[in-house]
Amino acid sequence: MADNPPSNSGSAIQPEEQEKMLREAITQRATDIHIDPNHNGYEIRFRIDSLLTTWKHLSKESGTGLINQIKAYTGIETGATFYPVSQRQHLTVSGRPVEMRVTLVPCISGPKIAIRILDRETTRKTIHELGLPSCSLSGLQEWITSLNGMFLVTGPTASGKTTTLYAILNEIIEESRHVVTIEDPVEYEIDGVNQIQVDERHNLEFADGIKAALRLDPDCLMIGEIREPGAAIQTMNASIQGHVVMATMHSRDAVSAVTRLRNFNGENHQIAASLGLVANQRLVRKLCRECRQEKKLAAHEEKYFNRFQLDPPDTAFGPKGCESCRMTGYFDRTGLFEIWRLDETAYELISGNADEETIREKSKLSGRSSIHEHARDLIEEGVTSIDEVIRLGLDLPWSEYHMLK
Ligand SMILES: [Zn+2]
Image 1 (cartoon, rainbow, N blue to C red):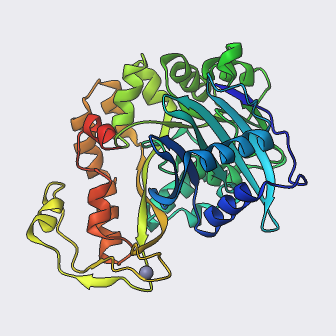
Image 2: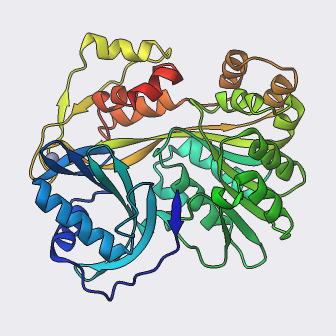
């Protein structure tokens, strides 16, 4: 996909319809805007707190007009509707600087536009603002103090992995440390960090980026995503060579990251020698504080926890809906975490080719707390609801989980 460098500045006057849509999306805290063509016009939807909600329906004529306005304003060529095009954009909405990435994809019923609103605050969060339970936070702080072994954050797409990496990066950036990142795409520019953009059109893949980065004499490497064997091997080798390495990867839970690295041709000795701490995370919607109401769990909801050998929470709250939360019952999101600090037992199990289940069982004994325990605690505290936890599909096999998404 073409991804052009930032171009237009916020000084140009925005077309009125575009400005109105962006202003509304920002007011409603949307992270993405989708303009979808259908048989009788265009549907504009906002993604707010993980879920899509329809904002407006436009006639074919008005929708085409809005798309043409966006194309002209962003500099996406009017003729470029036969392949996906992405354009970074800086602009001002209601006097506030906003950064966004506009992607146009040709669909059968017409061009579709997706706008990701990039929130600068994402790069400024501290590890205390991620929503980690205190035991996991101290595990993370121990790793930051020792910087021993690779930090791997796992989870599905849009689970907050990059925000976690940036928060840790903020802790370890020092003048005396040379930090290099390899990302796809580079969404936020960070002062004092050399950021490499993966560029598949010019054959610069993650594995090549890591190789190039290692020639830059880095102290710390942040790898946007391990998604193929070459990058996995390069990442593990960089860690074994003594660099501080942080990366993201897709995996169901913390322990299954070992299986994933094995599937990426990682040898057991490499995995054991490189991994230091694995986090697994999801983003869960928080109940609206203005209207949440206490509820009694139904029998099937109590049983949900038995599957993970946990007692159900003593108290629980559910959503109601008020003006503050647009009648959804939820406002904002927080992280659900599992932090696995590898110890001697874990290293021996990995080196001895122990299967995932054995590692999961034995590492539980050495103090690993699961994402299900964190979910139960957040339900008990009224931070989130059982419906929201069930919606995440944490109990489903990984293959079904992806189908759910
Ligand atoms: Zn409410």
